[in-house]
Length: 588
Image 1 (cartoon, helix red, strand yellow):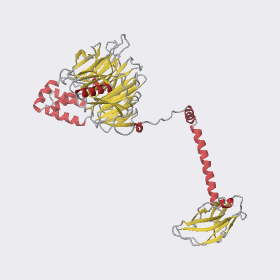
Image 2 (tube, helix red, strand yellow):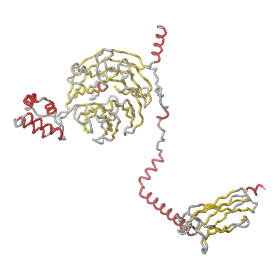
Image 3 (cartoon, one colour):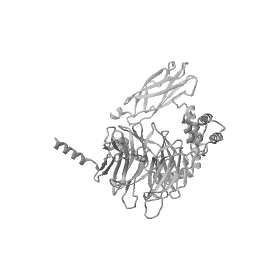
Image 4 (cartoon, helix red, strand yellow):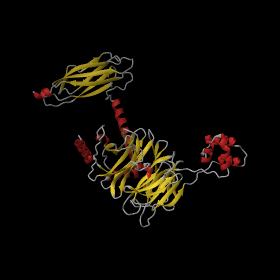
């Protein structure tokens, strides 16, 4: 049995697409995907792992740098990090990137693993009514209970939110309020927001080693783009809600798109030419992961679903997951031209999706809380994951690994998700479009002229048909009739059936006759003229007669049928019957 199990284990290892490079279950790393990055910090071609470690949430909050399987350096952080990015801030040699760590209202910039700069978010506008209330408290004009009542009124009605000081004061017990007022009344009121997410935007070139700007989202719904050298605000945009996830693409000086998932459950797309969102994607549940793959956006939601959208917010597909999403990251292999989305799930699995197709599954010993894929050390295809228990997992993609495009999950075939190959616009189409755009007025006038002529010709033909009674329905209001004819037989004898109907609502029609006009050298009829009985409204009256073809030359002609009324020379109805060739006579 042991030999069989060992053989099965060897087979599973051989069939796996990943090499287990390192697993430390007690690494004490507690972080998320937004606080992990891979960067060549020393410019030696060897990428390091930079992690913003949350520690216990109160202590041991550190910025850790890993090289290989060991810790290269540690720096203590004053507050919990909300995100970090690696970016190049200048063109100075050697080209070593800096690390920006967002924490509270500050961005701490590290260069060469040392503190370099601290950026502070600009203060927000303070409610003037709140300042007046605290000024009265400072001058002992109101007591703490009155102060509380006035602040509660402002909180419920004011457009500008209260400061942190006022909110903390409203949370206190009555016996603690007086000491709080004495302690803080001399200090000026400030309203400060915090950073909720951070990203990186190339400034003017798309190269991998180009200078990049920092993009930050704040709790009050603002998005700032910072200058990489002076750390001044280059551009400001506003959102309807607080951003939680962010993806940035493009260049600041050319064109860029910022895809932001907000706390109200919507995704907004910001562009360079507008300080407000250009597009909005309304989700059925709150987003927990956001990844851009090519020109599409992949969103993981709380309802155990994965959605694909275009840049303009059009929904492309939906994939249903077996467990809630805990982490998401992009898997990009430029050397192979391969891209996929890595999704960490609460059932200790990491799924790899290409579009909506599940192409691979990785089992993990614990629930994954963060995922990062890229170059680590000198190995390009490295997958780094941290677990809920503080473990660190490092896997390396085999060079022989091949991923099939077919979906490994049960469900409908791939053909349903393949987009139609719509042909590109040809030069002729573009030229015609330009011609129509330049000569729109003249073309429209010509079209209207031709349309008017067509309507006039149709009206003239209709009036002529009514005047000559050539229509299958009579134009008379006193004798509203309808007639059609059916020819049966192969020849030389034909049966001719006329179906006549009175279309009036309640008035019968009488004193009608039918007459036939035909070439007597070709045809002969037993009865060429007979009277029609009284026509009751709504009933169909079939009238039969027989036609004999006299010619043996295989030719045919038209038989005209007239519906006449006694005392009138003009027929009420006229029908032209195209007689078929007499096949029986031709065979003889």
